[in-house]
Image: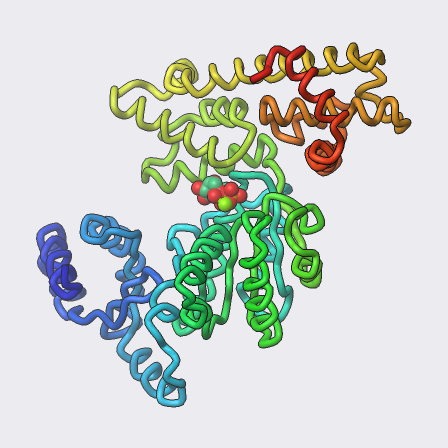
Length: 453
Ligand code: ADP
Ligand code: MG
């Protein structure tokens, strides 16, 4: 739909809903869309006063109306006539560099902001670093490397950085991209030998946000290409932000030439939020969902937070479910009803825990038996080869057969950390193809564990 028509329709909806005087005073003169950029639709308003009134009182409603007119998430923003004049003046010294891609497509999700990111011990450093970077892109921490497990807010923070920068300067060219998308784009262009076209996609970037860099693993050509881009931007002091599910030094199948550069700037991790933090997150999310404060009693939120301790995405999902269940059926928000609403989410969780435990202990005892050592030696920290090798094999089997998270596996081996387990698993995986004896051990043990295929 044509944008002017879309705005016309939203306007008439507003005319319908608002008092005629209010509508006349505020909205009747808003006719022009200044531009659509980075998922924001900028409307021109007469002055700062109207701008503030709309922002405070009507913007949320307008954005909700907008949802039914646009495919991707977009939001309205307001710009005053004075600001427009200023922009036009400064634009005459502004080079003609606004090509299609870089000027309109930032891939940013407007809803991920610093404002709605809840801070706690597990993410404070990541948050402050991100905010500093957003404040002074290219200066305080370049690159900024954020790592942590899934669902803990890395993507949210990256978008928050981008949104913040654009809010301060709509001409800043921010580009958010997932590393797998980068690879895909590269392969697509390389197949058609359109290398220049590919490089052009990343021309004129001021801020590059690359999510989930681990997906560059084993993609040598794309790494090479990304390396060039990194170098170019870095030299021009353009801000680069990278996220990953692991430390830069643990990015095994990415060239060290690249990963070592990630350590040049600032590296921060995000961890799991503690109970108190999880409750705060729920409260914030609830506020965003409904204007009715205290809709869900605190003790119910505490209950949800106590059950979902793994990551924020799950926590959010649980809250939405309880909200939906109790409002749809008009039930009271009680712990009992929350339990019922979440039954399907909780049960498999509990049973998957038992399942995991059972499988892990089974592999441990089968492996210890096979190598004629005790389970306590198997899981111990003793480093002689007759324990080390069985231990690595056991870790490998657990990962390979059941795909249990490294961190979880580590807990069963005298609390070894995520990266120790990962290295053991990768060592066996690599040696497997070189040493027939290892292959035999693995195959025999898989059968003994009841998992041959
Ligand atoms: P990751 O990229 O680390 O896997 P995401 O950024 O996608 O995680 O976060 C998953 C969900 O949890 C998102 O909806 C995000 O808004 C939310 N979330 C994560 N951390 C926070 C936080 N500290 N405050 C508010 N929401 C959060
Ligand atoms: Mg993410």
